[in-house]
Length: 222
Image 1: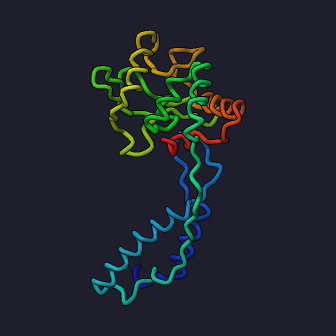
Image 2: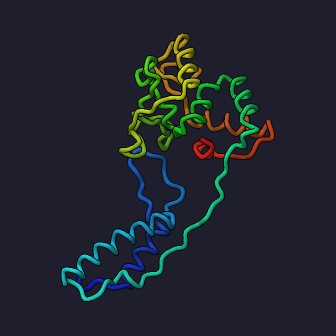
Image 3: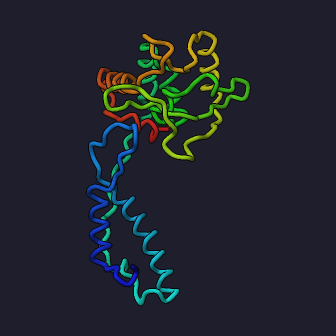
């Protein structure tokens, strides 16, 4: 009940969100870290605070119990990117490993790794030079690859490709023998395993003395 809600209860709720608030999604890899970021917790506070302000306006509460809560400080992290002068070296090594199209697509679109692995030729409109992002590939607990929806509703989208990227995919399509744009080299009827692509990324960076980046940092580079 609203008249029983206290600032201490709300504060405890925020603290729990920060420590264990992340929800385990069905058929997704088991979470190693269940904490929520300060930014998400502050977003929850904004929503709850506004709701309780409305309750005060409607005379259901005398004061807003969320008013006195202490919020976590936002963390300022430096964004890591692949330096512009290193991109040519990076792409040359990706081409040598047969991964140029996938890694070039990432740098020119900012797609997530699972989204890239989940692309099918039916998603590519060669005439218009567009790409529809409809699915993502991820690994279940136990190692089995599964196809799922994009991370968010807005993640399902159609993007216009740069001319160079569209042409690279057109050339790739001429020699393709799989329904997947980036199939598993040893099993073309299956998509590329995101773990393999990630390991290849790390190998390219290490062997060429490039900055140690996550795949997500390539989205920042884009």
